[in-house]
Image (cartoon, rainbow, N blue to C red; front, side):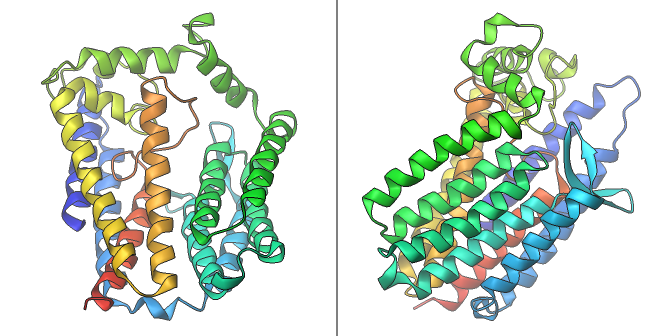
Length: 351
C-alpha cells in the first residue's frame, strides 16, 4: 500500500513537471511545493504508523470539534480562490481545512458506530450521526464547496450502510439528499457551480463556455492512444487547452501523455491500495479500526471515481482532486496521514 501511494505521487509529480516546462517562462513553484508537501506527508505517514491508533480511538469528539472550529474560522479568516472561501494562508502556503474535516469525520463516525454497533437500528443514533455530518456539510456549503460536501455526505451514507441501519432510514437519506441538493442550488451554489452541472447534461450547448473544460479533457484522454504522446508532448496539456490541468484535470494530462498504458498502471496502483485497505478492514477484530479503514477506503474511492468520471464526461465537474496525483499540499498531506493511520492499525492487528 505504501509503495503504491509513493508511485502514484511520482506519477503526479511527473505530470505537474510536464505541465510546467511548457510555459514560456517555466515557474517550478508549484512543483517544488508539491515535492515539499510529499516529503512532509511521508514523514507524517511514518510518525502516525508508529503511534498506537488506540490513542485517538476515544477522541472522536475532540477531532470533530476541531474540524468544526476550523470550518467556522475559515469562513471569517480564510482566503478566496475561484469563488470558494476555503483556504488558510500561512507563509505563502495555502491550507484547506475541509481535508482535515474529512478525516475527522471518519474518526468520529468510526468511534460513534463502534460504540453503538448494537443500537444502529435505533432512529436516535441514526439521527445523531446524520446531524453531526449535516453540520459539517452545511459549513462546507457556506464556502461554497459542494464537491467536498458531497464527499462528507458519501462517507456518512456508506458507513451508515455498513453499520447496518434500517432500509427506511436509507430511503429517508435519499429524500434528504434531494432536498439538500435543491436547497443548495437555490441558496448556496455559485453561478460557476451551476454552470458545471448544466454543462454535464448538455456540454455541446456552450462548447467554448461552460462545456469547455469537459470537452477539452475528453479530447486529451482520447488523444493519448495506447502509449501516449510522451511527457511534455501532449498538445492539449502543453498548449494550455485543459483548464486546471494540475488539479481537477490531471487525469486528462496523464491520459494524453502516458496513454492507456500509463492510465492502466495508475488504476492498477489504486487497485492495490483498495485491495490492501479492504483486506486490512476484514482482518482486524477491532470495530473502530475496521470502520476507520472502511471510511478511508470510501474517501479515496469516491474521490477517484468522481475525478476520473468528470475527466471523461461521465460526471459533472465538482472540483474534486485525484488523490496522490493532483496538486494540493493539504490534500496530499492528509491523504498520506490517512495511510499512516491505517498502517498503524495493520501493524497492531497482526496475528
